[in-house]
Image (cartoon, rainbow, N blue to C red; front, side):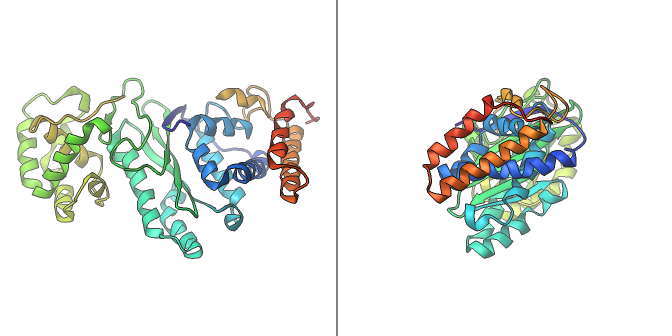
Length: 360
């Protein structure tokens, strides 16, 4: 199982109502099928794989190459699984734009019902967003954040950032990492001409340690070093613009970091207001002044299942789509009723590919 990132062209618009009306029940039935066979953690594991997620979006009939696949699939899963939390052991929170900002409240409300530690999960949600928007500096700003968790404490994140300059979107996948500050993804890379500064790469442990020590000393030492560095040629791989090195713009965030007295890099990431520029300033001083470098590490055949919204590889076959939903429902009902083994019921789904298309 692979986790990591996926790059997609940035497209505007939304799925038409007639397609969403089908995507929601089909997403629900597929999710229920996976949960029935592999449990809620199995579904989270699959969603954390960018290839499986992309294939799911193609099966649901969305454009295989569109950034909208991410937000639409997440929205369909959230709507389809709403009200089934007790049955599935899964909660889906967050979404795009304003919905992403409601994620903490949605997590807390769900945890009141399940008895889980809501603040632990809220922190996981915030840190995963902070890492991909500030600690992984690849030119993409996160605008969509979906947080999924199970009653056993496992969680996953599917979130997406956009780069208006390149017209691309990037999707990031998470699955309950051991640490937030040491390779929480399996892979992170820059796209094309945009250098990637990866402050959570495993090999940058020394840079992170010095950054934490600098934050604990207060703004003074960092600002003094930045003044000195301004007259030098900063490492090109940091992609630092001249205005980013203005000490007066960094004093406030560095003071907040000092007041928090972070014990490690994860605690530093959790400091409110400390974003990409503050983290980059600490990383730059750690590298130039202290010699601890940061890191610069830089499935679509499933569209044939039902077609795609924009007509690629062919227009969505509505009759076949509805037949697939009904077939999934019957298979799962039989599995629950015990009239056949669950594995057998699910394997029959593979034969749908050869079924004749119903008239659309």
